[in-house]
Image (cartoon, rainbow, N blue to C red):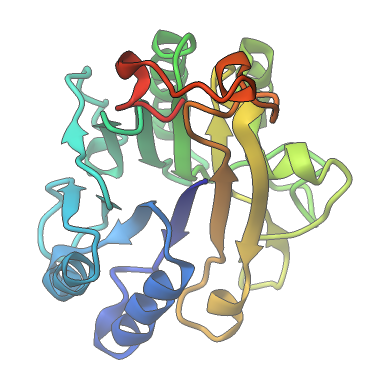
Length: 267
């Protein structure tokens, strides 16, 4: 089983919240974690503790000490993808990495929430291009996307750029949480007026979606004010002996071992 996590930790966590944030990350124990609103000012402590506990493979964006960026940390090797640079609207809030042992590509994103100008639309258009370029392989778009489906992921009609979620669905990408909770109503962030929105997502490519087994929000970290966002955890069935549809491969059914060429890929 492969566990992914995404969590917006609110302006880097700060000196008061960071210790509990790190403890929560260790408790969730994902194989790969995506931290949005990561800041280098406190990030050295976060990265050091994670490395000491097994997440020594780390890739970060260069956002500056006191600006929000992204940290991706994993238990197995990670490397920055050779991908086009994001537009200035995204900058350090976009990070593509490869997890070669897992056979997985991952785009970590924090789409800006702006209601004037074209920054948000430009960010989503770039995200769409990158998803389209990776549609035929195991690939994940993960992070704080600052949108959701109109009428489904909001308590009050305020979400913008929702059409992009629909376009990704048409392309074959699947919203992990919504796939398992088609009628569900949970919110990962609340406005200052108390209106809830589900804006933190894990979107799985067509090659990866059938491996989905579990998806849930860790609301406790928000309710205890470690952050203003809930964490999202997604689990995928992995291994050369498991088919994407949840069954066993023919070789596994016969008791045969997996061929050498799939030993380094879980999908």
